Image: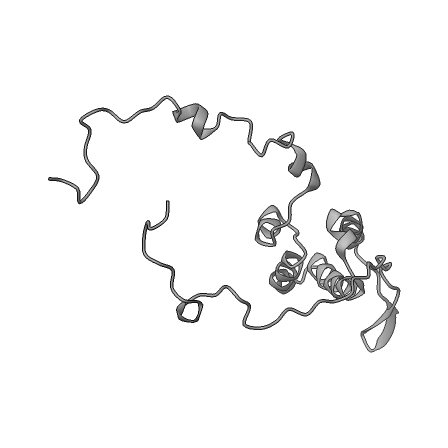
Length: 162
């Protein structure tokens, strides 16, 4: 109904315009295949020896390759994750100081349910779990409270006591 409420502010006087202060950069997407854990040498006791990946790190790497997130990884993501594999290997070789950095790095890829929620990731099966109804399966608010009615002579609205 026209005339209800104050007129909207002019656009130039609005405090919030919901526009990004910094424009977005749109990149061309190129999916990249996961690299294998590389063979390399490290210095140990003054000589170069072949680095052996801990079995647990090999399993961890395969978990990332098989993860749903992997289909969205580009080459720079895999390179960052490869460096993260070295931190994972340090942890599994007993260097507990690597734990904090490992946690920060895998959080960026959605390693835990909390990480995925923060990154606004959802699994495709969850999208269709409600059969397209947009409901959890329980009764709606209308079904739960639709029969409720205001009682005659009930309390008046605040500020309208008279």
